[in-house]
Image (cartoon, rainbow, N blue to C red; front, side, top):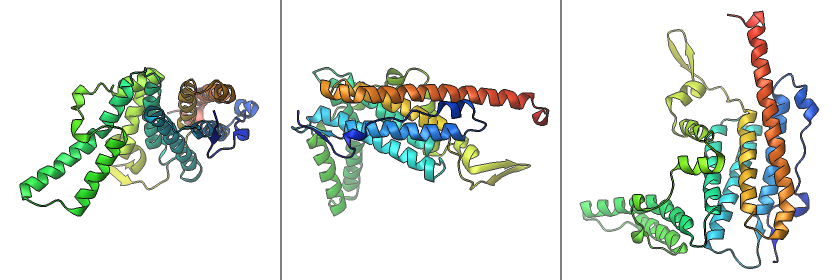
Length: 303
């Protein structure tokens, strides 16, 4: 197969090992934050090279969907790194929620068989909202006895073009209950186990602005009530380490559908990034526990 990687030089596919001594001797969270950013950058570079592979023949629909999801995951990780470095973590939770579902979708689709039922369900479920939007437009036109507006015609054409690119017609999409697409809970647990879904639910608050999000990030509780809080959020290592673990886990699954040549090229750096991230995460959790115990024992923090 003739191939190239569009955005990343294949010779640069590597992951830098964290400074374990700096992590063991850490007196604050900065060494862990540095390691988390660098690990995600490394995993992102490897995965971007993998996703950027262009075969000698264009991808078929199903392979294109999987590739598109991996490209989307890479872009979300790029945003995570930028957010941690420049925006102080303001969008960490919202971005990791998007990343988690994107990677869960990809993992689920990588397990499809030759019939392609999972890919078809993905496409149909994706187009439900567009179909319902068209129905709203049609009801409005019928209620007002109005001709179709130019913007409505453009929207209709765009939605129909999107569906036809996948080989289906919008009006032929079955109802949601007839589409065998698993819930987010099922997809996330299949990909990452039962402990992953709570973080997805927590991320919902950051997206929709729940009371938990308001109290944690946008309000300050004071005597007698509350005050607005325009302070910056604080970036933390955990979302970045989780992103590295999830990205590399699913990239390895994606890699199993690629050629033996590519498996040999990408397997080692992906496995290294995954192992480094797990070890760093474990060290960080032990550091947090030790720091918490120290504060409890310190008389200055008593009471």
